[in-house]
Image (cartoon, one colour):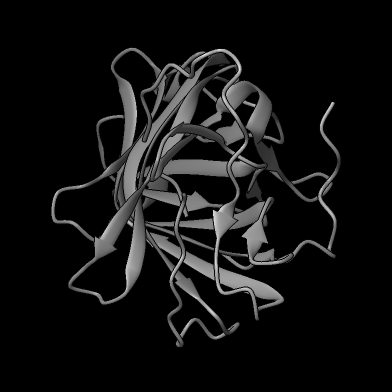
Amino acid sequence: MIRKYKDACLAMTAMFAFGAIVAQGASANPLTVDSSLNAVYITGTNHVAGATHTLTVEPGVQAHCKHATYKGSAAVVNGQVNHITLAPEYTECTAFGFATADIKVNGCIYTLTTPTLIKPGEVTWDAATQIHMLCPVGKKLEITPTSFGASVCTVSIGEQTPGFGHLVARNAGSSVIGGMDLTDEATLGGMTYTSTNSACGKGGSTASVEGKTTAICYSNALHTLKTDCTFS
């Protein structure tokens, strides 16, 4: 059972792509940042043209978002980060064959515990044990496609731990944005959802999310002062 969302979590508005098999006995590998910091602030975006984030609720029933942003924060202890909280925002979305879709996050967030080392500069989070979706009490992430301005149906995804999948992050080196960034690829599957009618799927535990992002670390809560962040 995952713990309930707490207001004390450091987070304000990241997702979303993966693919690795971790060798048995692989070690935990925290994110490394400036040891003088008490906290680091992270923004993840799919800024590359055409890099949509996709939610599939069942085969052939999908939502696509051109813009996905993840913002969050993490405590720093001796230059290491073991727990990251990210709040997503999705815009310019289409869903389930309809022209437009509105995705309301409703305060839901993602939490990532310490990842596992794949090789120097590359780590993975196992979806079923190291990634959790937390929501305020009574709230769920909602996807509502519209037709001629009217809602067609609504998919709701509540607090849970995905059934399978992973998130893989890699050191990106100096980018055009400047500084040391991270790239990550996520595939989360086995997520449960409900639907108000069959146009949005039948409901069940078949939902999955895929996406690629570039993550940038900042030393201030305004996300204006960049700082390096790497995996050893």
